[in-house]
Image (cartoon, rainbow, N blue to C red):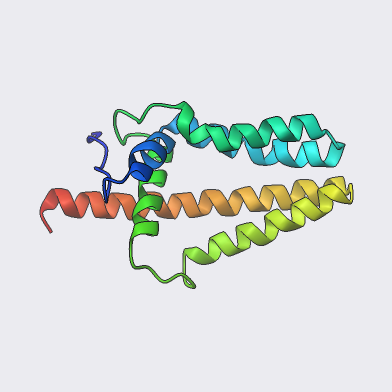
Length: 154
């Protein structure tokens, strides 16, 4: 059963205009699709395409209305990430290490795309995205634990 979206942790403008809209599953899934597009544009030296994809990445969180519920996996992931960034969590432990791996794979994908190494670009891009989705899955678990604890009164 879906519940209403978690209230903004601090009620700031950033929460209202970025996090709430970014939690829309359309925002999260369309942003996920941008990594392969970015690498393809860099690999092909398509600077206009690269500029359009980057403009979309910047505008994306503001293009969609806040979600109506927290039923979608991506919505839960964004809510969990918001809790993670606002909370007092170990920045060098698990699951943060997934972000470091994601960054390393993403940088290698960028390097491989610039060098026009197609297999390495594809592999590093895939690894980067897999690590990102693994992190999002962990954020979903965090959100669900917090939501369930809140609902049970703990």
